[in-house]
Image (cartoon, rainbow, N blue to C red; front, side):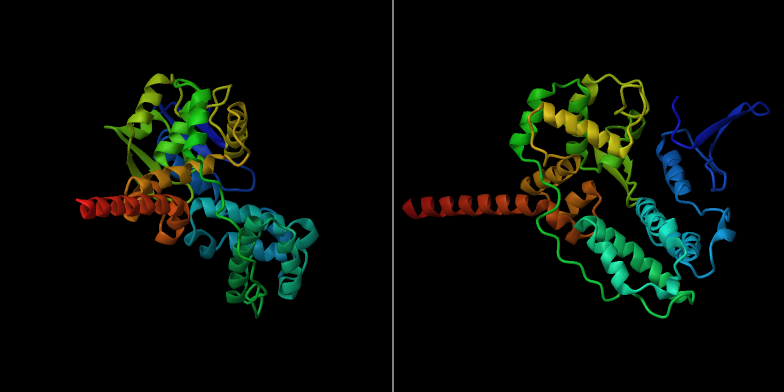
Length: 345
């Protein structure tokens, strides 16, 4: 069985048990409980991936430098205690790039707001927001620990994002994909998992038959840590029954390995191209389509959030706006027709 990246197995002859450890350079060895790819195992794996880095190389950082402050921040409760594992991974990646050798020796106390703004201006809008949130958290940590007196990100404001983010798949686009990729194929399975669970691609690629019991799919979201119990839709069940699977995850590469997030997106793009769909059709757009369908079916916001895992109504609004408009317009026309018939009668 292929193990997740950095995971090593060790068989103890004394008790005839196999133990699994996350082992990578510069990080402490972490023992992982449960069976590989199971929900409990993957939760421990995700947490270990963002675990505190050891002090290897710390002595090479100049005291008070960008590199030193970032290293201390990574080991702090502010970094580990306030955000999900997914957000921690994202911020770690951003701050690792921020403290690259070209910037790492700069005195953190002297970083000007203008320099940070210049860095943000060079980024795409969505990336700039992630960078600003990461740097703002880092600066607040630096103030609390005496590395700065002010927050250079406090006055930085980014222009509002235009549009509604990822394109929500239309019913016509869904039908075109399904017409090209028959039930029993890997592309059809991928679409069904995305569309009938309403989950992110990073969660869908970790799903397997062991997550389904008594017709309910259990999902622990990597981004939020929320655990959801989602009844398996009849259409999804039909696709699963028609698709052979000998692995712990439903979706695997040609070599039988689970997909990484980017690798899956690249493959999904090829499947969309084969079906003649525009580049705007992306995996996340099916999550939005799932929420739109639920809204059009008359589901309440709380009912939709119970499936999508959104934490607040504000987050959900962007996903269901189009569906709400269509449903309200349809209901309004139905009432108008009923009123006209009553008047005529």
